[in-house]
Image 1: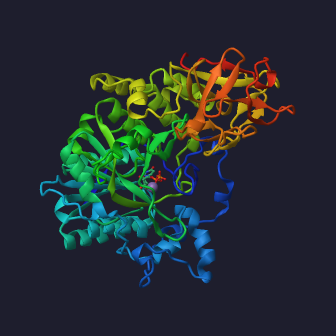
Image 2: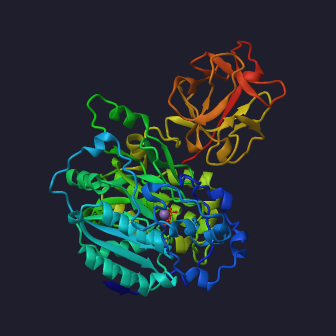
Image 3: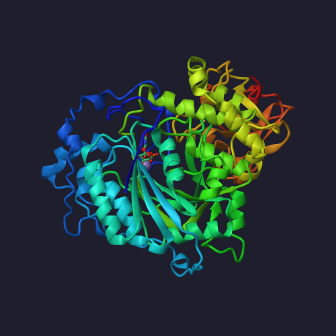
Amino acid sequence: MVVDMKNEESNGNDNIISSRSNTDKNGIHIIVGQYMGKGFPWINQINLTDDLLNVNNYSPLPNYGENGSPVYVPKMDHTQAKRLFAINQFNIVASDMISVNRSLPDIRKQTCRVKKYPDNLPDTSIIIVFHNEAWSTLARTVHSVILRSPHRLINEIILVDDASQRKFLGQELDEYMNKLSKEIKIQISILRSANRIGLIRARIMGANFAKGQVLTFLDAHCETTNGWLEPLLHRILIDGKVAICPVIDIINDQNFAYVRSFEAHWGAMNWALNFRWFSVGHAELKRMHKKNFDSTKSFRTPIMAGGLFSIRRDYFFELGTYDSHLQVWGGENIEMSLRIWQCGGKVEIAPCSHVGHVFRSSSPYSFGKKQVGDVLYGNLIRVAEVWLDDWKNFFYKVNPTAKQILHHDRNDILKDIEKRIDLRRKLNCHSFEWFLENVWPENFFPNTNTTFGHIQSLYSKECMQRPSNGVHPIGKVIMAKCSIEIYGPQSFIIPLTGETGYIKSDESVCIDANSKKTNASILLIGCNQLERQKWRYDSKFKQIIHIKSSLCITIDRRKTTLSLAKCLSNNNKRQAWKIISQNWNND
Ligand code: UDP
Ligand code: MN
């Protein structure tokens, strides 16, 4: 079935090629600062003619990519593979060599393989939104669902075409899906938006059309594995107010190898509200490691990755679907996760459900008239305005670019925001503080029982700073000229004077000394809740004392290097630090 839908709101007519850079190779991290406003000139240098964009070169070779194995494109095709990479930001030549019906390994743990599920699982609509997706990846997503889900649980498959321009996604796709639908006796519908509406509104469009008890969203370049669906539907059967995600495995963007990813990771966000994967928090891990804890059980995640999840249809609507003013891509996962948690639901990951996803290092499609960074920040501003309470001021302070963008485009970005604020009120939701304390106690956001600020050496007058500003700002703490304004790389969450605790910074890094010996370097590494990361600021000599070793952070005479040294009781300036506290929560 094909349904044509005209959509009133549009971002304008977009061309295909532009880029964002927000995920690293593992699809894990978003670095907004690095691409803001820069653009990617090299992308435009590639001359992608219509015939390259519109041709479907799917021609599988026997055994290629079977069982999730990598495909190595023959040498003679390397140039072509490189040339075509920018169209999808993955190696389409490799994808086209792999059958849409390829097999995948069963990567589940033993307890998951033998688990039995009740007969009365709810059925689901599978919703796949796409814009200019490659044919083989889109078709493989659909086929993997058909191959590896019990058909009685699939109410229907809905493809939402967000105004794609590539020719083979038109009539050719209609015909293919019609035929497939008849063969498998499952309804497949293609909804088409006449204008580019972005992934958020495309998903809403799919949800409005859906009839299943549950909505299951997938990206258009996924592959589901054995037994992926039952754990999701089972969790929803038990608790109707859960959004449940599979473990997202990695389909390599170069060779399409299926790579199992860590099960013990959950999603959260950094100070710029960019999604991040972190090790599952301590409190949740403790719960999971209790005796008799069922290892097939789902665990909590503060934020979901966003592309792949199941939710009861009635709950999805009761909660207000999505914020339909979010543009193109991004932030909707943060918005929805905060909304679900703060308004009484749960977001979880089912360790028995594994789905592969092609993570890309940049986005292949256009973001419309606006720069990609502006679109993303615009979306995140809405999230902050509705869900963050006082932390919205913190968001603007550590992301001055967001404040500028809001300043320039206030009316557009905040359009109808009162409706979402009303929704929050109507749903009687908890505060963001509640979310931080109860859902994500390991967070590294400022709060009222810690100090937020810079740490200045009274000897050199310089401030401690993260070694780099990327996704993994780890290494030795460096010293740099103190910034007067709040400046993220110099900002730390510090225990109140006299109290013991961690000194945290953005990206979940903590000040750390890895040895009890003097001269041990002062590092910033991932927060791990171990003793070696515990510190106390002592007001008497203004020392920062390492709890485990009772040594003090000391700066060398050259004023560059920090290390542990015996605490001196003579007011030694090289051990004296000033905590410059900053207001993070006022306007
Ligand atoms: N998408 C869409 N319209 C858009 C942007 C994205 O329908 O304007 C689709 C896209 O084809 C994909 C899904 O939304 O199926 C998620 O986008 P993407 O895979 O680029 O996001 P990522 O996985 O990189 O976060
Ligand atoms: Mn994707």
